[in-house]
Length: 605
Image 1 (cartoon, rainbow, N blue to C red):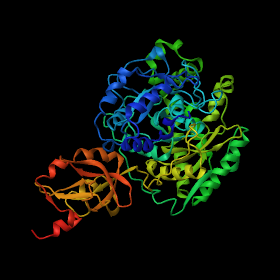
Image 2 (image 1 turned 90 degrees about the horizontal axis):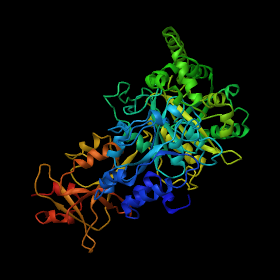
Image 3 (image 1 turned 180 degrees about the vertical axis):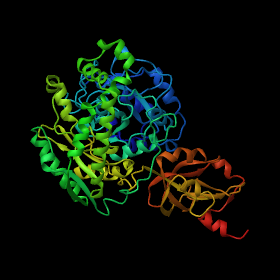
Image 4 (image 1 turned 60 degrees about the horizontal axis):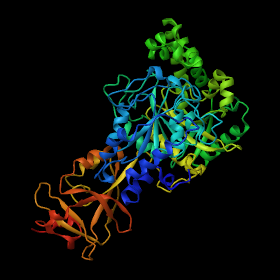
């Protein structure tokens, strides 16, 4: 993994390289595919499209300015229960496989943003398991040691990111499948609020509980991806429009916060003393960031967790593949067949009684949020070997769900965060969770917690990149320098504020630009043109931070002869910003000497 490509596999690192011309998309994708197509001792991948199938994704980026797409040329992977048009979906069972005509809703959002899908990854069959070892394509080995489990069911998706083969990946999470693999592979794992991400084009495990999840090397990348895929899908009956939390976390940790931890007698590490010590260090680390630790009663969370597999929700797993299961039961792994087959037995009365008990437990857990802003737990209590899982598949899988199985039943959102390494150099992670729709507010705390741990990114051995912390609202923003009608108080500024953009600062360009008043309007528009001959001047601009999910539509609305390029500021930094085609200035009035669009508007005549 020690090659030059791996040095910049974060999304921002790749985009910086593309914008500066240091690498091209075709170079990056070719190197990534070469890595993926080598011998795969960890059984990470199920299907990797050939060059012909990938060509349309690359061809559409030819001639496109990298600054105009928030995921321009960024490679990603999909868990093989998520549809990619023209590529078979197996859900970890070749006999079940089909070839979809259309990509899943979330995948199409990513492709539209410029991302390049490199293939489908291994998983516990039908997303049933937290181990990553229940697959006919072979057990998926941990990124740090293939003798240990990767965690499941989103096994390959996590390992592909940890190894630096892709920049991010999609998984799914019903019982912990978007968090346990993150914890075991030193990654950020986002388990969004149920319904925030569309499940259209996803093979269900438990349709009422499933959510698509995100794996990334750091919280900033996870935030960027979340902003793009968190789009309401009216065709998904379980989709939910985004909501503003009544009691948000915005502003912390700067303003201080309280975080819950299970009472000491309720913590479980299954004899793993390293994990126990590492969790104590994580608690101390979160305290150092301004948090006050508060012990909470974890019993109702644990009881809710037991309902997932001991109650009638397993019947949903049977319902998801009922026709196939009844026709081809021999196609399933023995342990998978045993779990899903148990879903045929519960009666309707069992389902109602379980719902009544769950609602009572929800009411008990709601009281926790009166005293804390979020809760911190281990992501898992220990990391077992593949041999250990194969010896006791049900018990070990149950142990891994101790801190995860309750999450979707109780309608919570969560972020798994890298937090340390055992003495044998295997990762340990923690999870932050909070009530539904606080996803974006957990991410800045996860960002600071990951930074404070000071760990390398995934299994690449590369250090964390020096970049500004995530803003308190958890949204990823793209800076844009504006010099005319989009500035504060001017006619087109609403195009920024309607996209929740915020003003970062007023500044000036480097003294190497000419400035013109273009013909036409209303509104009147300026043209900013780079001049390397020494005849330019410093021009007043404003730098606005535009949320990544609104950046594409903002750029699409810019009329010719204007466009987005790289604008050099007076401090020497380059940011995306408005530039004008030189040919368009022939019939324009040069106003370089004024140095400001506002001065031009205020000038007589």
